[in-house]
Length: 282
Image (cartoon, rainbow, N blue to C red; front, side, top):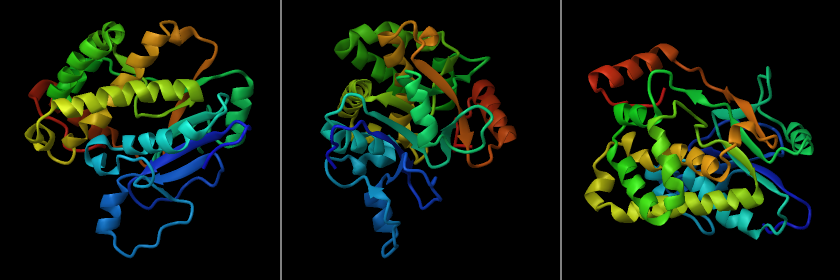
């Protein structure tokens, strides 16, 4: 729907299954991988407020590799590009992970977001995840398959050389804004999507069919995982003073499902010291 002159505040909630969504007008539930879901769940009745990512300009069929990014692409192409107001804000969260203000146990609301924006924040991010005994690159290499990430570096070196120094800092940085969760003002949102999908589509084009299909369902989602690292590559290149800027706000991540920390830590140690790649999210 084409936006009018009033600025929009819209955050899509990417989900691959039926799930209880926040009852707040800030959020737009979006079914990612809609083609696969509808094929597997024939005859299912969908909630009226659920948008499908296989409408309009879309990459829904890439969901097995791109995860929630098929939803981000849909939002960019079908909503953000049609909005003529540069003061609008758009964002991405997940059905089980939301942003929340300090000490709250519920997702950020539209009223809360509007109050934050009135304070002149333009970039809202999750609090950084810290990897105390690993840098970002080594953590990726220990837990996932490193080949696609190394190929990404070659693409950045060729097509986006200004971003290469920050990409190489993956080997020294020990924290990052993860999960593909953020809320940006419209111009920055569009710039980031141009950067992100420019790289990921180039990466996909550089891979053979065998390279794209060699991994199991968990590891096949490497485009989504690489994008988690590219967010800070983009932001710190544009804003070297990101951590000190007054228009940037970090909020806590609200997990709506229990986190199995024992399993998570165990899997991390097995990956780091015994070469056991992750098999699932936990």
